[in-house]
Figure (cartoon, rainbow, N blue to C red):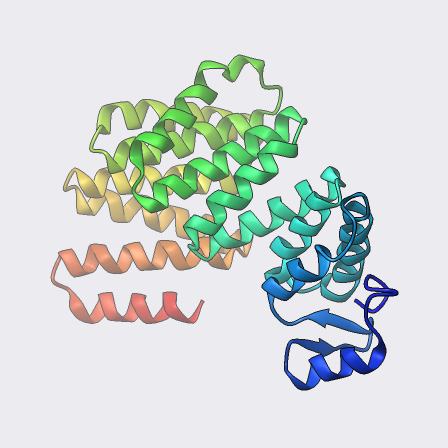
Length: 276
């Protein structure tokens, strides 16, 4: 900050602002903004043709300081965008969006993923970002927005050379159709996903297909068949050492036992899922 405001404010004034809790000192750089409003006010003290340079100075400083702190990635992306380093902005917006999605911070995830899309030119990455954005809308209950993205991707599916992404599209679309109650269409989509993951020998993908099939059987009221499918999926993901999928399966098995009114077993499975 001291470098950015060179000639505008002296060290004594900076120290006064620290005491006022406007800025805080850091070891890596001299000062960093405490509040976003003060950040923008400081930038506007400079001539417009200096802004790009200033944003880049700030973005590289933030990147150095917060490289391991994913909560700061959106702020880093913002600075790189303003500094017109679109490749860096795309990377950090994508990481921020994926992180927000996994934490169900859906509105943030939507904003960051759309920003990443704006700067992406790679076909596979664009597809990956669109799938993620559709999943965010799914989490938000924005069914039509989610469906529109999946149908757009399916309509151009033959243009994709990445078979794994094709499988992700079909499995995601199947899950959406399942939640909408379109069971037969969901089955068709999940079978297409299964064909792809079997061809790729993708054990995790196959396990996820099994989980979706188990959900369909559960919705259909066939609890016994649903449990059998989930048990097989549990065996597979245990071998893969995938804790997240294992936790999801145990949670669903708990729900199946709850529906059967076997509450002790349900609680046991819930607890095991919680630990994971």
